[in-house]
Image (cartoon, rainbow, N blue to C red):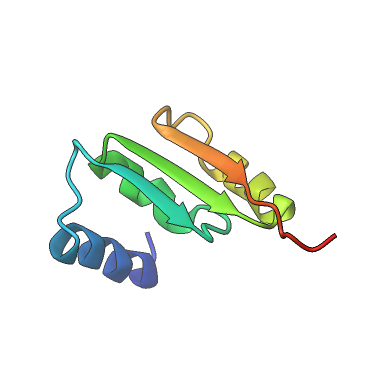
Length: 78
């Protein structure tokens, strides 16, 4: 785990008091960098992003982590 993820994870656990009973929604999750680490500390983690390409990478990164879910957001621009 790189230092930028460590700091973010520490802040979420300490400041937001994320616990193993929480269901977490991350909007703009990108490639699931934080979600991969946070999933071990919460009941469920759902990552949302507008970029299907980023979510493709997130799918690979989160493979085998059963309490995660990814959702593609619509841009609203058509």
